[in-house]
Length: 258
Ligand SMILES: NC(=O)c1ccc[n+]([C@@H]2O[C@H](COP(=O)([O-])OP(=O)(O)OC[C@H]3O[C@@H](n4cnc5c(N)ncnc54)[C@H](OP(=O)(O)O)[C@@H]3O)[C@@H](O)[C@H]2O)c1
Image 1 (cartoon, helix red, strand yellow):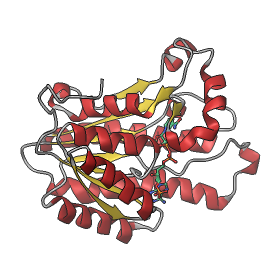
Image 2 (cartoon, rainbow, N blue to C red):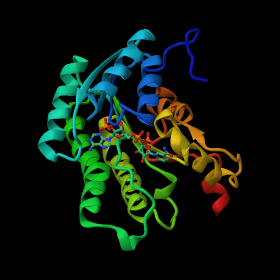
Image 3 (tube, rainbow, N blue to C red):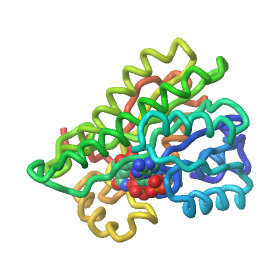
Image 4 (cartoon, rainbow, N blue to C red):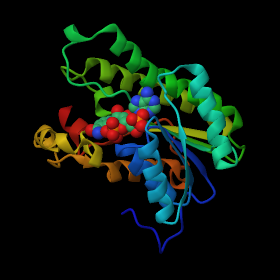
C-alpha cells in the first residue's frame, strides 16, 4: 500500500534527503516519503531527472526541492550537499536515505580496474560516511533516522558481483556501528537490502531480473515501491525500537539460500 490519503501521514514535519533520487529506487523512495508528509530534498547529478521528480512530488501535493551533487567528487562536494540540503529544506535534515550507488556490470574479478574500485568505494562507501558525518551533528534532539540502501549482495557471495557486494557489505557494517553510536543522540540507523528490483529506469533489464528471481520463494523481482515502503516504515515512529537491522526486501531470496 502506498496511498495514505485517508490515514495519518507518518512523516509529517520531517525533512528528508534522499541520495540518488533522480532515478529508480531512490525516486520511488522520495515520492513515498513525500506522500507520508516529509519535505524531500532530491539529489543526484541529472538536473532534468531531478526536476522531473520534484514536479511529480509537487503535483501529488507534496514538497520537494532538487539539489545537484556528484557524490564521487570528494569531501567538499559532499559537505556542500549537506549544507545546501538544509537550506533547501529550510531547516536541519532529520531523515537521510543513503541510496545512491555506483552500479557495476557483472564482471569477473580479473576484469576489475583501479578506476572502478575507486569510484565504487567513493560513491557507495565514502560518500555515505561523509554525508552522514556532515548531517548528524545538526539533527534535532527530537530525533532522526538514517536508512542505508544495502543489497542482498552485501549478505551473500555472488560470482561476478564481488566489488559491488563488498561495498554493500561495508554499508551494512556501517549501519550496525552507526546504530550503536548514534542511539544516544536519538538517531536510529537501519538498512534495507533489496534483491533484484525492477524500476522504470532499469526496464531493459526486467527480463534478466525475472530470470534471476524465478527460483526464489516468491518467484519474482521486487519493485521500487516495495523497497520504498520498507524505507518509510524504518524511517517512521512505527520502527521506534528498531536499530541496526538490515531488512531484506527480497521475496525470500536470502532466506532460501541458507
Ligand atoms: N535495482 C536493483 O535491483 C537493486 C537491488 C539491490 C540494491 N539496489 C540498490 O538500490 C539503490 C538504487 O539502485 P537503482 O536500481 O535505483 O539504480 P539507478 O536507477 O541507476 O539509480 C542510481 C541513482 O544513484 C545516483 N548516482 C549514481 N552515481 C552518482 C554520483 N556519482 N553522484 C550522485 N548520484 C549518483 C543516480 O543519479 P544521477 O545519475 O542523477 O547522478 C541515480 O539517481 C543502489 O544503492 C543500489 O545498489 C538496487
